[in-house]
Length: 298
Image 1: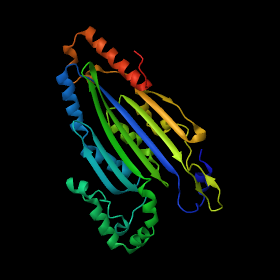
Image 2: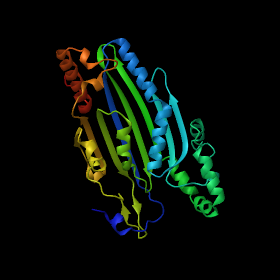
Image 3: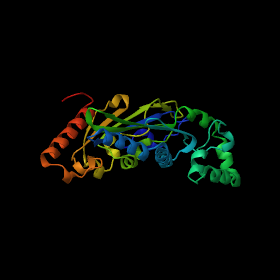
């Protein structure tokens, strides 16, 4: 059921000031028994999800929500972990109007041999109409600079007294205007091996129609799960905790089945005695339940 803003296509006064924020957090769990295996797992994860791969994921997210990349900053950390921040704008902006401090992602695109921004500049030069439309968006650029961004941080973790290692990814997508980050959920789920997923979505601010009436949302939502493909939901147990009157939506997902081989690092499940297999599976499940619950239980 569409809300009034969607149904009647009400003409807005000025810019759509609604800010929509999606927080996507995943945990990948692994059984690494020895200290060597633990360190090798962390090294593997650190390489598998380095800043370059994370940047590619975020660039794809930006494309999916129809945003233009204004700036990319990325960093790999020692001993492990990586962070990427992408500044975006809702609509195409004339390059001449982009702040000089913004790199438009050119260093990254040049690294992978895909300097898309150069192509966009050429298109703008060849289209006076596009240039004129973009030049009208100067204020929009500044409005978006501190509102529209995508960030990712990784947190590999292990303890020498615990044979279970974890890898956490935090992704935050903050947009303002008509952009909605919810349609990126299925892509994000596919991009990571996720045993536990925590998703938060909130809408802040308001926008007005030309008569001055305030609208605190521009789309209807009852559950984040409605934006996740049914086939993906089938493999998880999921619960919602929503505060509708505050436009706050929260979904937690825990994988249903543990296929032990998928959780062993450099080990074959058939080399492990059946009794120990059950013990490892039990430990993995308990670790997942504690992380999913956000408390020490066992």
